[in-house]
Structures are given as C-alpha cells and as structure tokens.
Length: 102
Image (tube, rainbow, N blue to C red; front, side, top):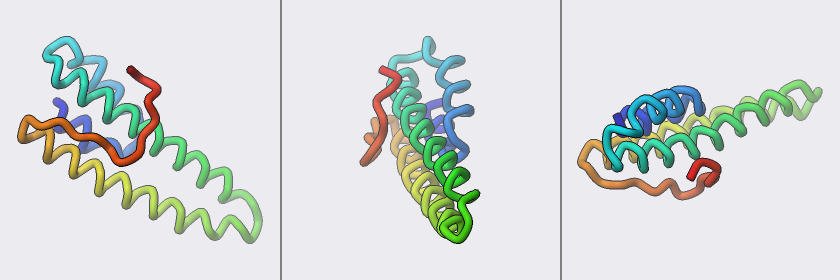
C-alpha cells in the first residue's frame, strides 16, 4: 500500500489520502510512508492549483503550461523514487514537502 501511495502522488492528494486512511492501521510503515506521500501530494495539488490561477491571466498564462509540465515531471520522478524505495521496504524522504499531516 505504501508503494501505491507514493506512485500516485502525481495525481494530487486524493488517492494518497484514501490509501493512507484505509491502510494506516495495518502497519506503522504504511502509516509513515502514507503520510509522506500525502504531504507531497498536497504540495503537488497546490502547484496544480497555482498553474490554473496563473493560466487565466492573459499573456502570462502561457507560462502556466510549462509550470504544469514541470510539476508533473517532479511528481512523476519523486513518486517513482518513493514507490521503488517503499517496494524495497525502505523509507523515502521527499527533497521538499509540506509537513501538514503528522
């Protein structure tokens, strides 16, 4: 379950949230890694929201496409790294993340 939580951070916070809520009582590892994935998913969701807001501004809105692509790339790269570490039973620390869920 921790592997799936990390692998789905690119979608935002909803899928990691559901996985964490369902599986947090099954093992301490899933609880810890689920929280990490959820916190990074929240950060990714904030980035997506920011690109939407920037996207409605004339002329500057063209930059939002590049920002969105960058956020997707960061989410994919770090999500895959986290999923690979969780699959091996190792913890993964995102290089940057919000610590909202503790």
